[in-house]
Image (cartoon, rainbow, N blue to C red):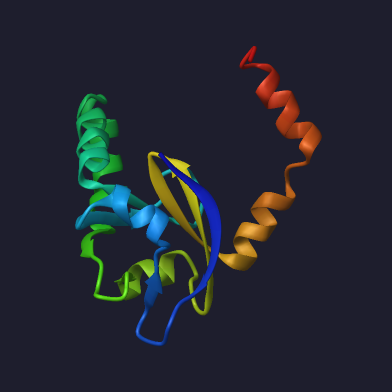
Length: 141
């Protein structure tokens, strides 16, 4: 399970270090893509989780599946860690997510999200402990 929030910088070449706690779960080769949840962030998937997502997208009606595939696959890249635990974020993805210097990495259970720090702060500011509690009430936990 991928979890935790981590603040990192992106170097001038577009590389970002992924915390060692998260690297093991991603494996040696994985996918980075545009986020599909309506937010300007990037998603990082292990190959297993990527394949699960691809399979689920394939079950959508053809017209919907095609739209999602065009968006997702056009902005998806296979990446690997370098010797220092960094990944190179392709320029098109850095532009999409407005990543320049600072980034926030969040473990989201089955994948990672990489956010522009300012956008993450704005997104996170929309929610209060009370609004989260209201959502969690639906879990009956």
